[in-house]
Image (cartoon, rainbow, N blue to C red; front, side, top):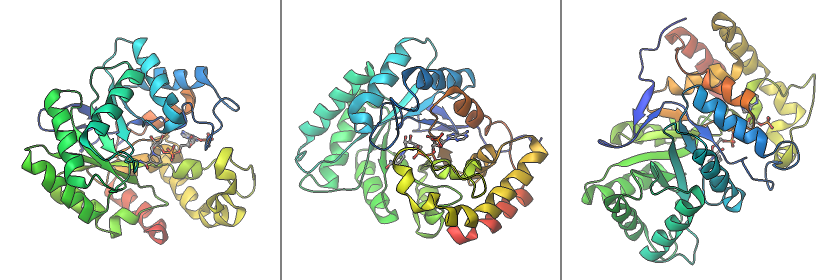
Amino acid sequence: MAESSRSQTVTLSPNGPEIPALGVGTWSWGDSLFWQYGKDYGVDDVQQAFKASLAAGITFFDTAEVYGLGKSEELLGQFIQGTDAPVAVATKYFPLPWRFNAQAVADTLTASLKRLQLPTVALYQVHWPFDFLMGQKTLMNALADEVNQGRIQSIGVSNYSASQMHKAHAYLAERGIPLAVNQVQYSLLHRKIESNGVLGAAKDLGVTILAYSPLAQGLVTGKYTEETYQPPTGARRIDPRFSKDNLRKIEPVIATLKEVGQRYDKTPAQVALNWLIGQGCVVPIPGAKNAKQAKQNAGALGWMLTDDEQGKIDAVTKPWL
Ligand SMILES: NC(=O)c1ccc[n+]([C@@H]2O[C@H](COP(=O)([O-])OP(=O)(O)OC[C@H]3O[C@@H](n4cnc5c(N)ncnc54)[C@H](OP(=O)(O)O)[C@@H]3O)[C@@H](O)[C@H]2O)c1
């Protein structure tokens, strides 16, 4: 197995928190609108996912105030109370139209910290680049104030374009604070950030990309196939990416991931996540609903695909660039 030549950890800001180059996404923890929390899986399953992640050295968890309407933060907070292990939490502020002044940022953060039962979070992100009445400058200044007060250790954005990243970065630079991350959709079946300037901007500005939906919501794990067709649960049922037609289209990708994975005794999910980490400055945050998924996803760390293998996977996923 090729040992990694790349770092397996990432520092979110110069003196700030260090996180592993892989995290865990907790959108499905407590969410029954999109996912099927409370039906197919429940609190015990996601608590086991939390424990299995920590046992495998994955100490970075991404949540948001809107996930499960606060339930995801609440569950994460409960689980953290039950461990002595250091845990780094990233959560998100949703820029709603009626949140138009700096006090709204402070109040929203107060509510998140309460649900998380924490005095501070490693990373606080703006969920979407909506401006409404507040404007980015006021927003970035409000976040910078929270860094100075110690309630957040680093600042991130999410779903920002390259030019929006540059603006946020410049506003924060006026306060002497770096922009730590842009959290965007990035998987082998969604490679848009390589062509729309976001990955390039991240490299230029020293910003980490947190790759969301890095398993294409389960598609690259190889468990959804045309032959053994089993529709996914929840809202994915009506997603055309899970149609038989699309499953046929992605078959060459799954075959390549399996073939490469066999050399390392790794699953398609582990190879897909390792490929993302190999792009540099990318930290995938796969969602895990149970211990088995969490443990498997953690196995994407600690080794690295060769350049040839990276190239082979690059070639077969070019249509998704
Ligand atoms: N900032 C944003 O706007 C935004 C948007 C979306 C997501 N996110 C973040 O990104 C995180 C991850 O994204 P995501 O949940 O959309 O998609 P994902 O990580 O690509 O896929 C997660 C789903 O794949 C399946 N899965 C996970 N590991 C597996 C494994 N090892 N083997 C087989 N199946 C596995 C599970 O569903 P099944 O078992 O049901 O197939 C799981 O719920 C979220 O939790 C959230 O923190 C952020």
